[in-house]
Length: 133
Image 1 (cartoon, rainbow, N blue to C red):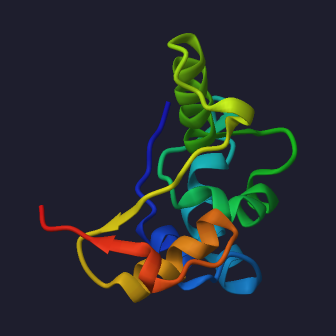
Image 2: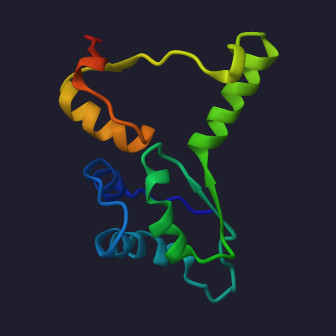
């Protein structure tokens, strides 16, 4: 098992550069060393996306990883677990819909811009509550 930091993936996700040659080049930079067959013929069969930013880059990651490598989105598995926990405790609202409260420690405008990419819906800065930790 190998792990590798991929800091530029975060920057790409936040800047909306999730597809195209830049995303592809960065994906190759990080993933090719992990996916290259070694002398012992070991080759990962699964990649776990260990950051909430990475799922928006899954297309670029898939191109480098190839169809034979399973990609596990840890954010999606966490969301499924939360849903099951809420259901088991009778806390899930009817129809699975509830309210969303957006909290940020600074830069409501930036949070709204970046958050819109992840939620796949527009977010106005007025929807973001600034909190002091």
